[in-house]
Length: 416
Image (cartoon, rainbow, N blue to C red; front, side):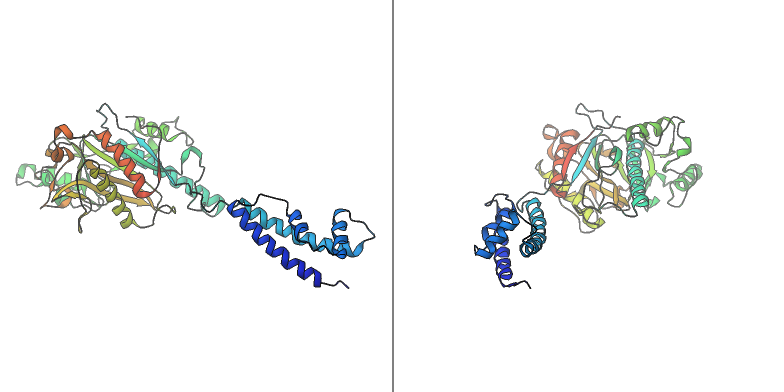
């Protein structure tokens, strides 16, 4: 029968030695060593234990007792080696975690003249969103579960990235999904000769109307060109949608010639046009870098705008009731968002130097607020100090990274 007294004594000493050794591995004061050497270092040097030491180095069949003990020790030491590997390969406690990334795609030009039709910017959002949702569905169907949210996923064609899209649009009016037609002031008329025409326009803009002539943006994939392939890049897919006329584009027109669309974002009617920076963040709010909370997200977008304006010596603020960012009683930036499975679309528009005549209250009631006005960076700082849309975009991207605590990475530009 084996006397376990010496074994218990040695076992306790080894545990203490291993604890000190592992602490040393963590803080770097002890080099990575062979754990069997650690075992020999703390082994009591009695004659019995010396024979055990010898048996471990040069085992023989005649020394069955020592071999039995060595087998038990080897099992224990193997477990310790596993612990050692786990401890040593763990990231240092002081290591800085890599930030989540948002990739910037811009349609802006440093030379100006970068405005594109609104429906093309909408198509970019639509394609990137659909590709991401399809990717998530394919992962769910093949693996019965999505990848753990909080880790980067290496997806084909970058389908699972967060995006920051930058645009400057041609003149357009957009209505949120629940916006009231009453705020389209140009459709108010007392002229009986125009009544029927205006009623037709109101019907096409109605939140409930879904006819083929509805003033909405819809993708009809049955019109895609034969050469279109599902595995093409996002840019190729956008080109295919445009060239095949697959984006249903039947707007109502305002008196100044700007198209009017009802879209899927929240909020009332607003204007986009040249001289205005439009930002569409497409973020998966299920990622651990963010919060699954649209109110939090709206406040974050507003904070990005506030910090951006501060860089140009403009102090702005939120409003307790209305979304957006204000300078005094006048709105300088509108915010309207949407989300699908917690992936955001649409975003915000900052008035840099737009033609404010398009906000005329004889055409629309901007954001449905009668008693407030509209302003711009140009109005506040003057022509000599007013930055370009590109300059404001560069600052806004930096502020976006700071507010959302993400790395912003420049990606391929968006062709106009």
